[in-house]
Length: 477
Ligand code: 5AD
Ligand code: SF4
Image (cartoon, rainbow, N blue to C red; front, side, top):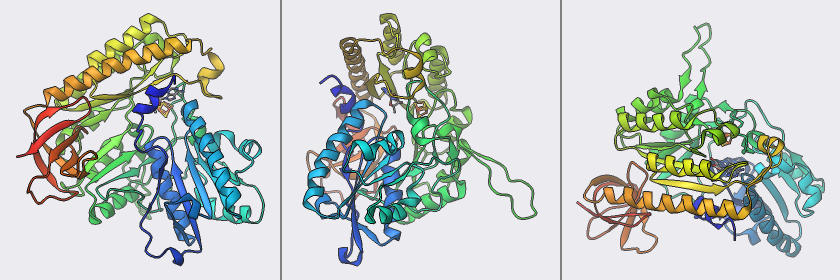
């Protein structure tokens, strides 16, 4: 399979995860829904908003599709493979629908937005199609679909942020939660479908973000990840008080500070940063607060200036390398990760080697690595030809993966002998006699439980004594 590498590295654990929130009494609900999510963290966060909207309508979630009256699939369009996975899943739901009369199937998210009502024509089994900005209309659409109509709402909005909706935490470990701080993207990277499926960028009311994070902390959560396609361009102007002067706008750095101040016991993470937008102010804020984690996801996409220009990334490799230097200067122990695309239109061996070189320069702790997948409607699809043969894309991607594997191992080896403050997330997957947690740099650390009375959500000092390429191994000090 040509693209196995890309799917392996992109959050494989969570793809297709069915949500199973705690349901006290399933019979108290008038209908039951099942929701399965694909793609980025933002999509998973959106499913929590959808669950909240449906809960308010008296619908309860079930972790079993066969028990549900409504089956939703929250979809991703970022690469063709993601869409294929969804289509395959939809054919599986078709059988279920044939067995269960009256069951409705809804497609949510980016694929719904991209294909719109075509979905209803192409995939005869789909009853409801809802884009990322139209979730408030879901209850009405369900009613329409129940009445036998085909229900579609794919309107994009300039101001919808779902600020007032308190997400129902789904499949959560009770320790870390995602908090959406903005929606959409104005960047127009030429390969990317997101600006078309998620619309214009808009920032959520800072007050509602802080309230949501406070509430999470009060409920026992110890870590929030602030989410946006491009968090560094967060910018919110609060409403001035009646008769008052205009209020000071809140930048991303200011928002980080507000969230960090909630409590030193609440860790703050964020994703994704755009190299052109991340500011010194953000870096200094990170350095100032112990509880803002020292990790930056800084997608490079390519290391070649020529390709970066075709990609419309609006920075050069020199600018990117200077950013990496600046991060290491202000936050010396900062973890840095990246997204990399192999085989973009016209990419030559020289361009590819530039990518390998920038990886070495940046010493990424980990990366999400993909080969280019042409997406309908994007600038690249309109302007350039997808001219790199599949075999060449695959070989280049494998070379990128090989380098990353070595860099990850080297980075982990450097941590042997160091001590980290680790937030305990739960049992290690392989061994229940071990805990799994993360350090500030976002590295996973596994360590024996021994006789210490620890629980999920505790912080503990762990000394690293060994590692694999993916994990640090340690013991409680
Ligand atoms: N082909 C391959 N990878 C892509 N990404 C976005 N669009 C494409 C595409 N058309 C990658 C980028 C982005 C990540 C979320 O997905 O690396 O940062
Ligand atoms: Fe896509 Fe670029 Fe926006 Fe990221 S910053 S969502 S890659 S357009």
